[in-house]
Length: 518
Image (cartoon, rainbow, N blue to C red):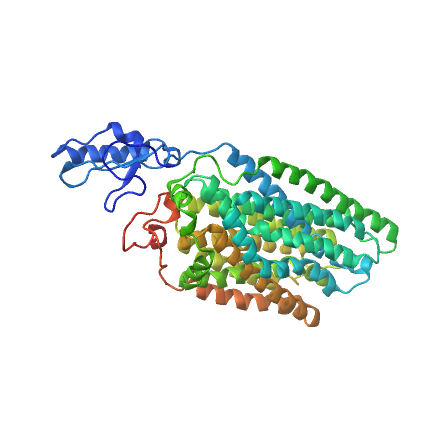
């Protein structure tokens, strides 16, 4: 909502040629004539040293030629305390959903024996997450854009809870298809989870917090994967000779997950709102004040696929994230090929991989908030991920499991740390297209590559060796480096990137965002 302003000027976006500064600096007026330049410099210093932009109640324009001082009233922006509760609840139910994704694969040999199925059947309990996402991402993204955060959050948390309870009825040797049904419900829940981090961060957090908030939201999902690597081998040890004990241990894991999911669903009902009372940034204020008829979901999709940098990112993000999904799904099989009876250590290696990646995610988010060097950072992390994958591949069979811990940690630091980079880079080069749309397409690409990579790497691993499967991923990651290095400038539809936290101005020929120019 624009602040009433009885003085001369146009409300809303600033006129071309003027720079908005905090209204708090308004007391430093610019006198006509030669004093205007000095006063303008004081105003600029006030904008840098005063209150943060996200807390500003309005904006005014710097003096123009001749010392004139046009005035414009901007929408009020403020930060809500509720934003931390929203972020925490989302991160926690995203954690539980990710835990349920990997809980079968990390002890695939145990579930293979319990249900009497092949390893490929157990792998599909992980790949069903990827399979469900592809056809449902566009409807889910439309729902997020049309109905807001709350409905998507309730669907994600609610289906996650329902799927967990269905699994509780599958704790018997003939219950494989029941557990597949429960996993299918959780996979649908994931569709309403993976696209939310960048949208949640933009809607609830200020310009100086948005990258860190997005990284934290992605972090919840990564932490769930870490817990999924750690707990199942401990809760469900390999006791194939005692089926009753094995069923008891599986039921403890399933019922515990159901209880936590139920609590988080109730907290989602209480905590989640579509948006705060006041927008956290000028860019969000401009988007929220846009008439509904100005938004076309089809046009948004069309614009994204016409954006060459985004299409390149779509492929490179899919390669990197698909490789991570494949390694996570097949980690147990790779480790047990060279280290028999090391199910628990396989889980700990997975934990090391993801925890190191969580550190990488946070550091990358902080680095982006500080530098806004999206493309450069993305390329560097991609190269280092490729190096980490190559080192992991050639040291896996040395016979020293401590080496696998170290190389797995290095691989995870860069590979998992790349995930929030892709989200934020996509939002940056596609602003003002909705964040949920770009995030949804990125995740769809990741699921497609994840299915293909898991099937191909799994076949190479079983027919030849884990090294053959890992080399297959290395080749694709090298291709991703080449595509990431393509020097193509994005076609922006606004004067300023979202990362600056300002509303788009009415300029006919927008310059490229400074954050992409390095």
